Length: 335
Image (cartoon, rainbow, N blue to C red):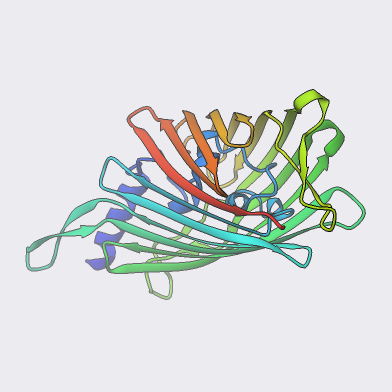
């Protein structure tokens, strides 16, 4: 009976209970489909070609290259069905490598469970935990970056049946700095299966959502008078700290291949940054083919930065609800 109740609950969850629109019928570990930060959520999750940020850990580990000295990011969102998702990321540069780690947690709303005696109790339908660690570095002599990450996925159904699995992400990026272009590709969630049944021949077999990402990003900066204005610390410390250009425009595009669901999706985003402290964003992601994948959705977002902190907000407009995400990032650059 325990296994039967567990499988029924899992089927209910896979049918689309997640407010993020993760109606994925043939794969487990739905927490792996959640945006790890507010910024990528507002950009249609077209993030495979974004580098130099700890948020790349959730999309392409090669993007951990060129990290600042230290960076942290946190996200929280509430769903309409009593579910909660939170993510914390941290990392930085160390001896030519970009290192990062993250923890994310998802808990869905309550459901009623009937035990063999007929007693009805309220339990959490599903709770998922993911722990991730990644590393990246530039390839010497060429503008190419490579990275990898490993993750532990733990999923619990009805507060009694748990499954564990390991997965890996691999990625690469290439940059054409003179044109403001960056390209990226990654394979995500390459691993095994979540199995909630401890039997020798388990009845349930839920593979992780294996995904290929192919993306491109174009950045155009408009400096003051044709060049950035900087400040010099002193004659004894002559490093020039360039002020951010007042207008920066980023355009991102991406294709995502969901191998297990035989689905293809596309996403795109646009970000405008003013003087490095004010940000306006928009994006869209769409399912092009396949019978089971996340809902198509428009997204918008905004951010404001001050004193090394950046506050971000993102809203996704799904067919049945609007999902709000709030994030905060800390960035420390080398002195």
